[in-house]
Length: 192
Image 1 (cartoon, rainbow, N blue to C red):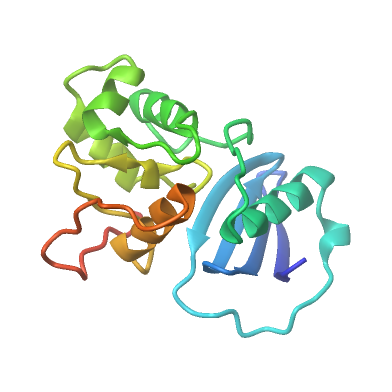
Image 2: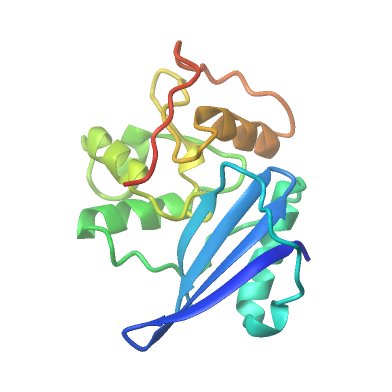
């Protein structure tokens, strides 16, 4: 396994576990609050610490998810729809959007408007965009599968911005996709 760091702390008597790992899509960091996944982030730079075998500190569920992320990045079709997630930082509306987004199948895309309808809020496409920008668990809650109605990619919460979103869409499609990139190729949205 490609685990680089495992950090375990306590917050209000709930164990917080954070893992850094390398994937073929770049370095990533995953955090759990208790048994629920609370954060996933693509990192901007390679992890500098030496690899360690710290998997003994992780639960079987955590180890399985790490392996699934590594496998996904290597091109293996992985379904993250049943991963337990901590969505408590969002509003009830955002939580509905994230739950609906987590159900978008591998290799498929929906528009912001379609996701609003799936979450029971037709006409709330702009609010869906806001919810996607506040998604703390991209990849598991696959906001990369949500695009604009004009077939444009839109934003993405990653240091690599929309380039990473395009890489994920191409990976899941099994080759290059024809989604339109914005004119400003450096555009990115960072999590708040």
